[in-house]
Amino acid sequence: MDEKTKTAAGIAAGLQGMKYDDKRLAELATEVEILNDAVRKAAAARLTFDDDPAAFAGIMAKEARS
Amino acid sequence: MRNEDLALDDLASIADDIAAGRTTSVAATEACLARIEAWQPRTNAFLRVYKEKALEQAKAMDAELAAGKRRGPLHGVPMAHKDMYYRKGEVSTGGSAIRRDWVAPVTATVLGKLDAAGVVELGFLNMAEFAAGPTGHNVHHGHCRNPWDQSRVTGGSSSGSGASVAARMVYGALGSDTGGSIRLPAAACGVVGMKATYGRVSRAGAVARSWSLDHVGPLTRTVRDNARMLSAIAGHDPNDSTTSDKPVPDYEALLDGGVAGLRIGLALPNDGPAPLDAQIGAAVQAAADALGRLGAKITPVTLPDFTALYRAAEVMVKCEAAAMHRPWMEKTPELYANQVRTRMEAGFFIPATQYIDALRLRAHFVTEFLSTAMDGVDAVLLPAIPFPLPTIEETDTETKGGPAVLKMVAGFTGLTRPFNTLGIPALSVPCGFDTNGAPIGLQLVGRPFDEAMLYRIGHAYQGATDHHLKVPV
Image (cartoon, rainbow over all chains, first blue to last red; front, side, top):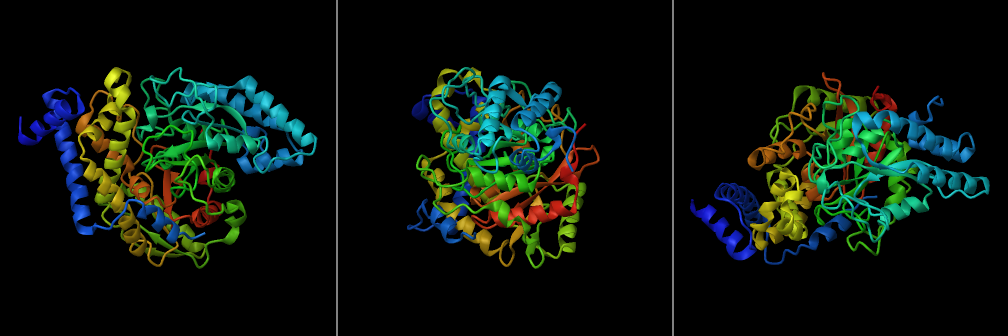
């Protein structure tokens, strides 16, 4: 079991109270790594301290055309 | 010209004929019921048909008209909806086994609006389990089958909505769209589907897939029908705090502006999760050419790299779905299809910081998209599904799971899911048929709350083409 799969195993058993076999844990670890990397890179390039999730609704209203 | 079979008329025509006394709601309902009897065995589009109740409703609508009361432009029109809109006191399965006998405690806001508009309810429609799946497979209630070729997928998750409208069993149907689930079945079945701006239509009383990305919207035979239906269901709802209080335009009244002078960006991306098939690209190019002949200025645009938008959407869906499904996933995981359960499991492992950053990124993504791909254009035209429709068998992932599922899902939703992240309106319109005889759909994408522009372009396109008039036999 590699490090990321061990981490997934720890989250499943220790934090979420869920059981998965090693094969599934390895799949999940790979899937989460891909998603996390994409979001982390996008965030690093764009986000600042003041970015608020609610800004999305504000932008939609501000950019509205009707 | 009137069709001999009333079920072959479009929504606007039948509604106007009912209003004018040229036909009745009962006659239209009976025509739809006959059509359901013929097509349900071939498509499995319906989960429940309310024959007697629908006829009673239709009689009541006719009686109101006879008494001089017309509720509005949908008065007496028979429809059916994806089985995820709650009707108080009635079963609402969400396409699942878990809720096979579950009775809804409230009525969805959109159903309430359609009730008030005088719509007749023919029943509820097949869908992907808990709106999770882009193909139309459902292991609990049976796969939905495409009316144009019953070996092929309908698209999902609003599979029954697409199939029932295409087979002329209903004049219109509600679907929902978290990653393409209105636009994919619309494209796959050769009908029109609108994913309006996030916040334009209430989600209250609808099964959630992802609160942040879910959009409620109509599937219909024509753009005019769709505009009429959206006007009836859109608007602020105190039961859904994400709805906008912006006034709802009369979309149908704005249809006839034409496209002369409009600027439409054409995107034929070949670098998404699935390569763009040549015949799909040719069909969308032909649509652009048709709009060009009508006076639109067509300019090539380059879409931004959708990878981050796509992944951010996946993070939101997986985290939100895992949270809401957790009790069932712990207690009765065997009641889910494998491919539905496995797609949610990653949500238990994604750090909360990543989920929050995905939400925080949305405003940046919108700003970037509007200032690049949409800079200087009124709408962007692109394909809905980048490849010809596969068969049900080819895409049966139930026994596979894992990376194979992700790859398949990414291929179907590569050009639709990013617009759920962006929350901007996107309209799917039929634009041809592939070499297998299955429909091809184009997608029009606009600025926030500019549904009227997309309808205007789509309506002009349908005025110059006949793809939407073809009926599966």
